[in-house]
Image 1: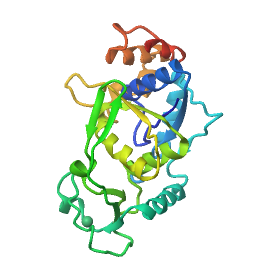
Image 2: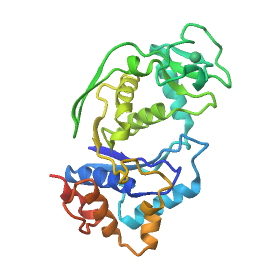
Image 3: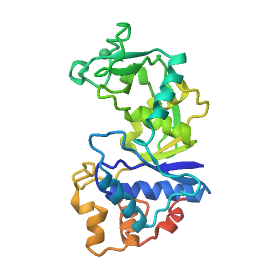
Length: 276
Ligand SMILES: [Zn+2]
């Protein structure tokens, strides 16, 4: 089993990331698997190197160690050539086309295929999409059970590269999981709706066995909202500064999502004990 912890350097590490790390390392260690670290900085406008440095420092402090000897850190901004090569492979078997629609023109989540047959030239300022054929993607989520998603119905033709020439999230992670041989993806339920699209893109790139997926509960604010990057009360930096130990932080994150009945300290090296 090869999985990954893949933070975006668009903010500091908070308790929501700690919950994800507990699931990623806990399940991987319980099953004799390995963990890769990937910096998902495909969003060039919001990513900052100081956030990356802080994330790596907080992870070290918490004690979550990637199996870096086997798999060095991958940073999405390091090699755009990989995404471009994958795009060339995709073109051989699928209809890839330029699209000049703005977000506003599209108006919703689903792209209606406006530019599919317009034959626009590919040039700066235009996005690139791939035609998505009808059909359902079924997968068995490790926690949530059988799932069914219909990428064409729900999202239409998928954007591969946006109008600012940035590779999209769906494309970057699909290519990364394929090239790194990631076979298990463990992440929060906020990304559940992306999974059908990522499985479809993986198949379109020739991947016969897409990864298996597990989506775990999110840590929410008492109000029910998702934690944000700016939630200072749950930032790992702030908790460190307040004098908490790594095991306290991990224990309270585990308890907050029901992995422990009460918050008791637990070291990063013991999180596999939370999973049978
Ligand atoms: Zn368009």
